[in-house]
Image 1: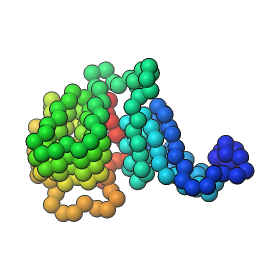
Image 2: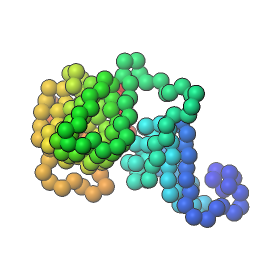
Image 3: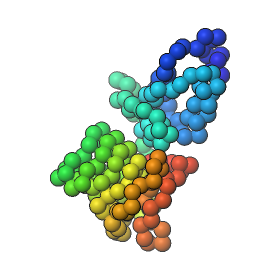
Length: 196
């Protein structure tokens, strides 16, 4: 597949994969990586306009760039009543973000900062402040972060302190309700990262 597209002499150096608006999951991105490696190519960066693709690429440890939607193009349809809000940048102490639907933060949430969403909260960075998923009572909501070390976690009406142990290296973690208690475990990459 890759050899056919590139011809006999693949380019030298790193390769940037521009996915545009395509929604690519972890499994498909892993297969693309295998194909590139088999052709002697190294992926240096993934560029996309879809938040789910960004999350899947970041989960594999790639350098990812989330571009703005193309001018004049319609944004991908979110589930009715469940928009996905994307915030780019660090949320600092004293700042607060609350959204209806899911929230994807591409950056860190510092101590003293608070993020809240009626759906899932996804932090593609370090969560060291406070996060509240399911703030309107959705008990199936979850909190996912590349480094989950918050001051406090809330899911629906459940409250928990963040773990004090150092995070496992390279493991994206999630917090979810299990039997009315908040449990932290490695993120389930097979489950859609933004529930609809």
